[in-house]
Image 1 (cartoon, rainbow, N blue to C red):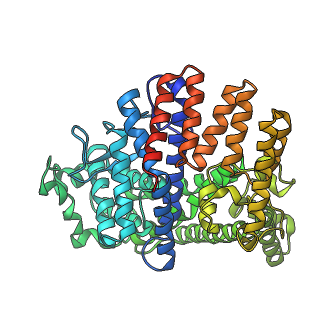
Image 2: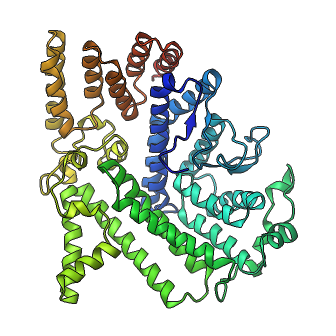
Image 3: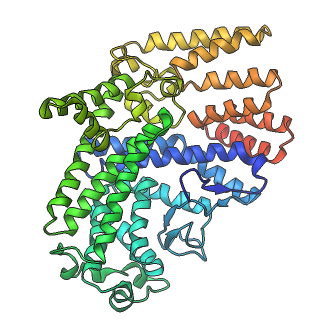
Length: 517
């Protein structure tokens, strides 16, 4: 049930593939936004910035993916595949019949996709409006984890919390860490799951107020005190969290391209902070070995912050420069350059090792669409078409100011001039002349949705319908709210004989056009 498995499936998957690809891409963007904001939850300007990022996603993409889910459920049997973990939780008023109040689609009866998406969207909206407090989020994490734990064991309840973090459903990671530490402290003072869930907590009621207060016994003082030492119940769970942290570091180091690396990196500090807090709030006196391990996680978190700044303000080469500087700093302290590099690669490295030894190739300079809108938000631009890729700049060329203003007018003119030239060539039937112009543009502006739309038209005129579909899917993952692009996809799918997916695309186009301000 790895992350490469599809989250969603439906009938006639080959015909539905383009529509599903857009839906999955928008969900992946939602997860990325959620993971990015979770480390800045709580209060202050960073929390306000996180809420702005959430609001931008909800306005741009959620209406599309929500409508897609409803239509595909009705017409194509859209459902969760069950091959990939995805935790869900409902309020009593929004729970669909026949499913638990909280669960995981890989373990429990899966609720309708649209119902899950609506429930998570409503939680985001409440957090953006600040309707609630820190205790509300703690309870909203703790209560579902206990319900899952009652059915599948305490370890799975803990995994439920981790899954909520991974899928961007938590605003403040501190609340998640507090809930996880409460579970672990309860494990430390009980002999097994039967004592905790059967004897202390009892059977959860089916409905009503009793279900809402299930788990209140864990607010008893004996479950709130850090444990003096770990136990056979707690140690494996804590070790599992620590091992999971290093698996995530490994995922960063083994990323195959820029998009995969950036998405793995942006989720890392949230989880590292979660693990560190869980250890400190569970154990009264961590051992020296544990303290050393937690210190290492804190160093990695600081490295992620420095790399993020280098990425946003400079370039991918700036990131490589930072990593090299760390090696030099270790070497100066130890006096052994070779040993410093070995230690760095073992403990601190946060890029694939090959990048330290060779120039960046195309897959590291031209990223996929996943990070586009996140970078657009960071740069203060709503249209990624005019956003130069930070992965493609060379060190010293960029800086955040040149990603946006004062040269926004220059970049806008450059992009529009190329698009106009390509459009003129297309109108004159000179498709071979238009395509190189567009591909050159995408090397500098890889998130330019109009360029992908024009490439789709060029491919379609050349008889390459599959390539045209691929380009339109990329354009829609960048700007799902553009009704003209959905219309083009619908026309193309109809031309390929895929009638019902064509109808879905055209219905989305009609809805977006009708709802335009």
